[in-house]
Image (cartoon, rainbow, N blue to C red; front, side, top):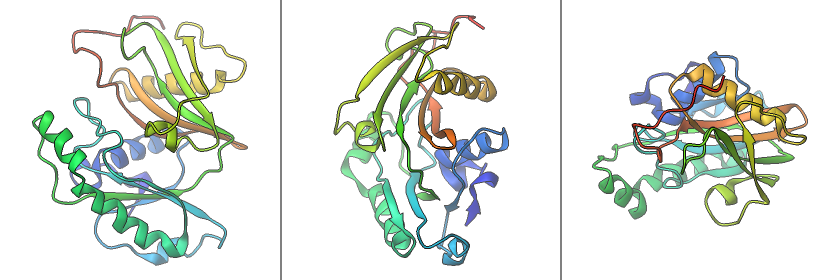
Length: 230
């Protein structure tokens, strides 16, 4: 197992974990955790209180790239008690066999890997959470597009429920009464990563704003560029 803060080799830890590790090293608030690349070691969780819950998510080597996000193709298991983490890891790994993941890969000329790394992170108790595109993913307009729900956003991200609201905020003036802190952080994440517009999952709890995932926006044409608005 590899501490998430040290995750960097995509071929080993997968795209999602490598990006989260990079963000942690850049000083971005990301929930702490580990990447399971082989066997799960229960001892690494022994320091947590019995009440601690965990988020168990996939991190494939083909996931979250500029050319293919694989969004929703692999399983995530949230709010997992410590004793149930091993079973959740097995469930996430088995999702590599999903027929939808195979079809998605074929449609993009990608070969699925033979194994799946798994992220085990501290589970947040968000007041609000959602996704943010740092430019409009359809028109490439210079505005943030934020969708959110109260509590956990997993059902919204997977398309099972609709967002409570969709908010558009100017990149040039990222001010909003409720979501201004989200807007400023996602723009900082985009700047730090330096690889173009981002599709970012975020959450707000009592401690502030957290980044749960960041990947390049895959719906923009390669010829499109973000306007020089900063």
